[in-house]
Image 1 (cartoon, helix red, strand yellow):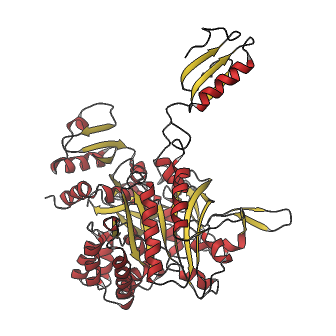
Image 2 (cartoon, helix red, strand yellow; image 1 turned 90 degrees about the vertical axis):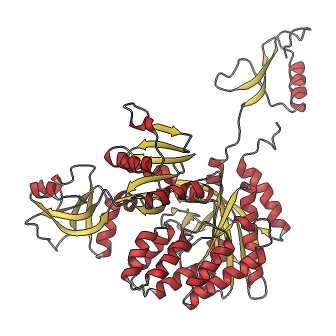
Image 3 (cartoon, helix red, strand yellow; image 1 turned 180 degrees about the horizontal axis):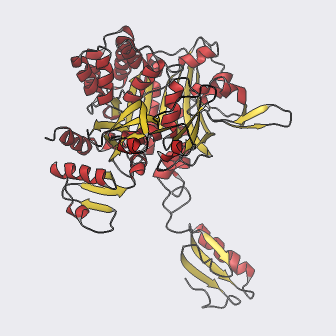
Length: 205
Length: 374
């Protein structure tokens, strides 16, 4: 049985639809219930629905064999997994954003508000620039507007939220999209069934 | 079930592996609990984590609970050009736990060979690694790679910047062929080469077939040497009972500042993570000004123990209940009789509510006939 961790929400449903088209349907998952684990022994898969930021943890620890997770989570958590496919959706960008009139004060470290402290630290380290990280967990865009930070490092999709709050993208760090990941041991001991899923997803129309 | 059958997996493994390593002429290595912190500060990149548990001893010296065993072995080795040390150890190391953000004690069983190494010693280490994994679970995979392959690939693609080299290493480590392909294409590597490289990274077949693929990709001297070294090791092992469990796996990576040559990573069916890592680390010996070779591996007992828990149906077998009027001599005799029959016996006045046991024998009264229940 191949165990697949899906992120709860829109992304997870989109991935499920793709997998169902490839022959890995599990009708129960679409029913309105509170179940978290869904099995279809006939086509050899079981699905878990988990918090998006937990998918890589489930896969790394072998509770799931494969999963779908955003590249932002992978870069932030650095889970020890295989990243086998860029699924090509959920596209956005990890960016540095700030108020439209922001000018950097070079006499002190930049204050960076973010829910991605590792990504932010690595990015500014690559530029040899000292920063102070303020780790937040939501509504990051508010931080520079109320003086909590100078800039933010956050995901940008359309940019609408930034524009409506008088913020703009200053630098793009890395493009983000949904990735298919696999447990390293499962890739060796369940390789046939695991890579069959990968190939079907890669070759889908 | 007797005590031997109930041994935790790590203790059972140690008994088996100790016999295995000694049958190959390896000597047990024991060491002090603490090491000078300077040893780890000077070789931080050799460690899996930069965090080390330190304390100051009464004399003022800064010591550490060791995060690694190999560094201590290398520091104290008696090996030279004429004398090769073959050692095995069972020790605890102390490393930060990534998820809980605190330090953990991690048991390791390891093997090191230090001195003049040639193709036989490489094959011997790989053999011992395979047999060690087989002792954990007969369903195992031993992945082999070679540092020369990635070093050669970086040269071939003219990747100079440290951040770019780290990106390539990350892509290989995570079998991320799509990002690696984009990067290499941007560095002018031709599509056909990238396609063959991606095929090798994701290859699931046997070692010999993977070696053929690798040979076609070996376009620089380090890569050719890597393929040659891997072929030599495989030639020594292709007839062995574990040949089908060997894989050529480019996702196996190690720090190029210390490791040069063959590198290993071992997996068993019951564990989601690698339970064995190792390789050839001559470069570490150079940092100690020792012009000799070194190769070894370590098994992670914590990971193995959590994946192969000791089956515990009962906390003990027989509860022997007594009261104030129980004859102590009869109580003791009954307990001994039960123990000699292989039971685990607990003597108590009242049943221990939280524990599970198979049966109860009451020894109330003065030992009159009929007062014992079995």
